[in-house]
Structures are given as C-alpha cells and as structure tokens.
Length: 162
Image (tube, rainbow, N blue to C red; front, side, top):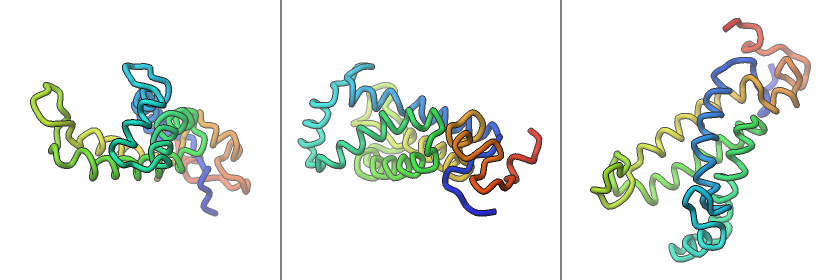
C-alpha cells in the first residue's frame, strides 16, 4: 500500500488520540491568541515571547499551532502534520522551559515552575496520532475516500473489526 500522510483508518484510536490532544491543547492556544481562559491575548503573548528573546516567527508559530492547529487536529484535517508539529513544540518546551523544574506539574504552587509531565503526555498522544492517523470521523478520511486511501486501496485498518 502506498504511504499517504492523510490516510485515516476507520478505527477509534485515531479519533480518541486526536480529540484528546486537540481538546487539551486548544485552551492553551486560545489563551495566547484570543485572551480567553485567563490568557493575555495575542499582543501580550507576543510581547512576552519577545521578552524571552524568542523570535517573533517562533512565537507566531506557537500561537497558531496551539490554536488553529489544535482545532484542525480535532476536526481530523492533516492530523499527522499537526501531530508532528506538536511533538516538535512539546520537545522544545520540555527542553527549554520545563526540564529544570523536574517531572511533576506545579499542582500546589510549591516549586519554581511546571515540570515536564504534561509535555510527555502531549508527545505521547501526538505520537500515537502521527503513527495511526486521524481515525473515524475525520476530515482526512473524508478527503481520502471512505476506504482511507487516495488510490482506492483498502487499508489494513479498514478491514479489521473493532
């Protein structure tokens, strides 16, 4: 079978992992882009990134990935692409921001900052989606045809029952 980045089987795994990743990531992006969920909005977030000497293009990419990318992941459009980008983002955040704070998130406010457990969870969800594809009820599946392939081939995922 030919490899296709938009190929999506008819399984539940892709649906579950992409929804979990997208729904978890979207509020973080909405904070940065729209200023909702207690966020500061686009301008203030870009100023914050600039104060950390993060190039504006990287800051913009983070905001768009976390907001628009998470919505497209929820819809299942380009899920493998968005998943790969989320993995890169989370590895960057883990190494540059959270690694010095240890493993655990700062649930009780008793450490300097957030640990990297959230980053690892997001990497795991994104990696599963990257490997598996969008699964059921995805725009990738609609765009590539009901059998999951642009060439009319039936994928292994489409022929196996749940």
